[in-house]
Image 1 (spheres, rainbow, N blue to C red):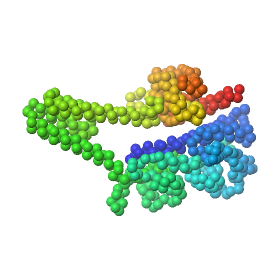
Image 2 (image 1 turned 180 degrees about the vertical axis):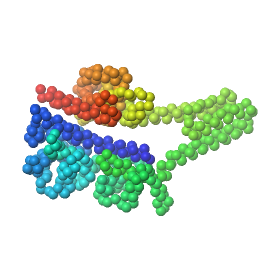
Image 3 (image 1 turned 120 degrees about the vertical axis):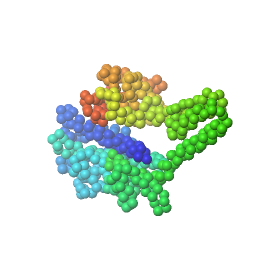
Image 4 (image 1 turned 30 degrees about the vertical axis):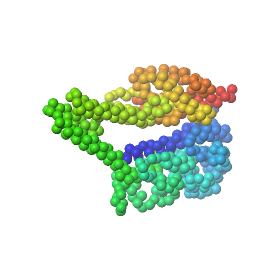
Length: 507
């Protein structure tokens, strides 16, 4: 149950992190833009236009983005409408510019109209807004906002992105909690926002006393909670905090959790009973010559019943006992092989055949433990495949998959002695150690110079991959910092490559 909660929490956080990274990229671009051409005036139309173009491009690549905006501080500009606001129209699915809300027309306490500006201004830091109903757009949404400052601390304004909360609900509706389990989403002010039994309807109501007590108890003791109702039905409950501060609450009938275990126990009992009957009959009908084989066979089958399929035994008595031992041994081998295949499938990306995100997280855990000193020094390269969405939209997802496969092949070909994973739709990670780490600079140069070639089955599509590398312990003291640095460098490279492509088209 705990593993299920962790898995679904990661699923929600991945969705939220896409928005987080998008707004962070816009903010980083706005900071870098201040130093172009000497020192660009942040209050100029040129500066605003650059941010607008980049923001719209990022928003178009962010799933669920409903609006993107950059609003100036009216205390500096004297106007409450300076900046820009672009929102996606439901009929065209395209972002169009809208008249910005007049910040000065509302009181700073009016969260539903201008909370997105005053809350980050007052806190002085980036934050997720508590889910709210936006009266400007008539949509229930969540927003991630970053306050923009100059180097000397002057507050310039805010950069933000709004997400339709239905995107989060669609994610929740895809969660399968056993057969009849339920899931609820609770916001920062302890309001019930979504409950799976309500057919995807956005809620906006105070928590019930019972649900509030369950969440409080689970958070206090950091463990699962078992509750038995008046009818004697027991359910297991757990909750996890999402990256935007919301709580995910899961409830599953205990009978469903125990059903798989009970089924296996019944099978084991049945097999054990069958073996016991067969063994008893054979012992009665055979001489002392087969007593040892029967004893050994009984011992092995007990191990099988307990889940240990590693031992093998085949009798050489040339009778029914030998046939039985051969059959059970073959069953054990097939079962063990099937388990190994399932484990491999769970850790392998279906499209590329390389490690998937589960395999990647296991590798990260191994690196952090570094039990055999294999990762005393290493490098992490974050990759992001360019033009995947354009390929999917133009030629179809079949050719998009071909582009993903080609990217994986090329990365594996250059970094042949490294651990390669596909961690997202167009995202890959390479962990370099030993020889590849020693030759990292040459390999990265070879990687950059060797790509930009057309796909064999689609010559009009060029392989283009953004990348960024960081090292341990040369640059950072822990894996999370190394990856974060590599990821930032990758996004910086992605922006440069995008500008280069645009310049080539204009020439």
